[in-house]
Length: 445
Ligand SMILES: Cc1ncc(COP(=O)(O)O)c(C=O)c1O
Image (cartoon, rainbow, N blue to C red):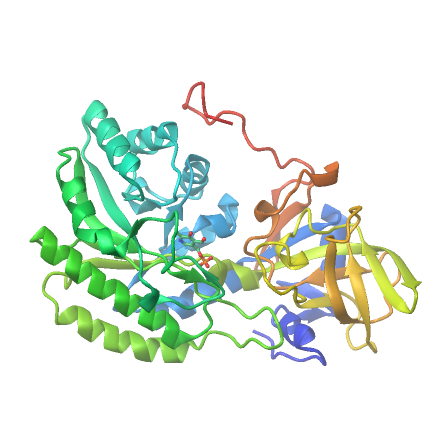
């Protein structure tokens, strides 16, 4: 990987992709070349950087946990295929994500299905086609999965998703420890286990926790995982037999803002050593397959959102760059995807490197002030036709955005792998299928 260089934090992050003749490049291919071939706006993903993240994390959790890629972070099958190729399983939250996971090469037993509202037709679809484990999140789902399993004559492997207590908190978006639609409250663990084990069509294999997302502190993460292990041991004691699986969730963060630093994987590895000892000392969880299911950490740093400047204008002393892309493709960068404080994603001019910068506001083409991609961006004096890249954009980008708003074309997605460029989604054709293959009528869409 080239040495990070550059005068702003964003330029230093960009340097991890590399430069070619002073232009920002991915896998040696300049953004200008990619934009000429695939148009703008454009999502660009670097497969080699995905592998780097996967391998670094695998190394940190080696001997403790396996990795399932949370495909909601970026459901393009070509992206998921990179992780499947590295040995990852896939965590899904819908039947369409199941299809994406299979298209990426995941075998059914390496797919986990979690989510607070799984429709009966989705459950039937995955049970019929094969699934590693379904994570049960409410009483109705226990009954539904049991009925489908019984009707198909197939016992279904299930885990109980637990909404952990406040003791397991941390991270930017807390998803546990408070009233929550995700899973069962920790306080109900034993009752839920009894309800599940009373169903002959269900095989209770494990428990699942997901305590929060965008966690940058290795100790907070390890604390959550320890809490999960204790809960798993408690569940196994109540069951009276060892657990087969323990899913400790995702939530590993990446730095977006200059105040944030990357998750310290060396520290995480140290803490994992302690956790391995905890597992070894508890016979009822000693042989369980422990998994984590990160999304953002694996794919976020590998992606760029590239847009073209349409206008550079000054209004009452503030310089605005108006781009051909905006929040309809990248809601998170506009600060409207659940952020409490709107802060700027790292943003750079694609070419050339090393120009003097001044603060400006970067906006998209939508007719709303919400469509602001950066408020205080240090950028050179870019003119119409120049390219701007938003970094850390591989996760929760295109598919986490209101692509239909104002009916602009959707961007293409391209994957660069060692200099080879593949268009993995064409421009303007982001269609949600009206019916999923083999599901018949009544998909609810
Ligand atoms: C159940 C579950 N697993 C994994 C993830 C992935 O989270 P992250 O991308 O923060 O790792 C999410 C995100 O919402 C989730 O809900």
